[in-house]
Length: 303
Ligand code: KIV
Image (tube, rainbow, N blue to C red; front, top):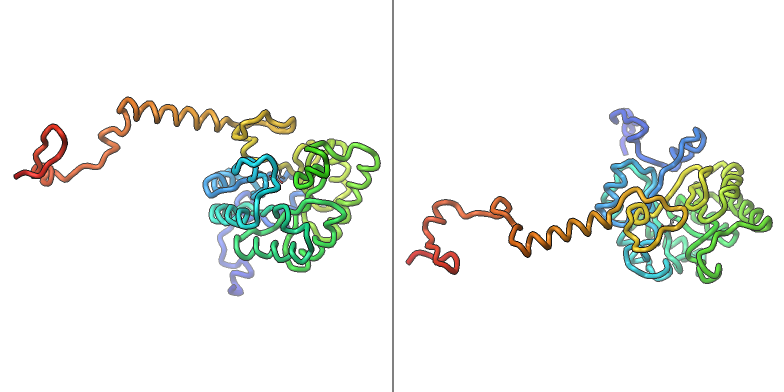
């Protein structure tokens, strides 16, 4: 990098709305009480649209196991599949921070494995940060990732990779004991070096207390309005999940209806020979056409 580029000397001025999102700019948002916007995306086209529309963070979530691959939990998705989708998202995104979700099994076995797999997301797929689920049991891994220069988003509360241990997808942090444990875990993850914490499926009042207790941003999903930011699964927001939405989901569009209608119209047009039209067809040059005779069955060369 040249000294000028380092100082930003010859770079065009960009408004904060266009500037690249970094861990520092997210921290600034918390300080200025400006909500952080985050969404999942898993492929080039949707990541590009989400980035152009202005989301701060794009999470390549392991939710792709369910909403893209059709599994009934997030557990089966593999490192190679997550890397593949993260690369596609990386190619699309200019402004947002790309966070890769570490899949189940890629960090639970050992901290060494966790660091090695996280490095792959940055080195082979262009992620700028990784997300891992869990509380006290992840503090050492967060510390190790920070030492390896890997920005980490922690994830507390309803952690889908622990579905079997939790006995289903249930709201967490409802007892006094659970509230103080969650708060202490959030603080420990912050001290270990996490730059943000996703709070999922916990009561609004609890998320509000944790958000106030932390200096790093909290990003809520099913955790109420007082978090420093919000995240949703893109397919939930667009009605692409084929299931009744959870209480915390707001549908901002109906992509299912849009796609169904478009495909239905296409099929009808093909069946009724309205597609393709002459304008949607390629044509021979006049001279070549003139050199051909056209009997009933189609084009034939003149004898
Ligand atoms: O995988 C995912 O989409 C997530 C979000 C729900 C936070 O972890």
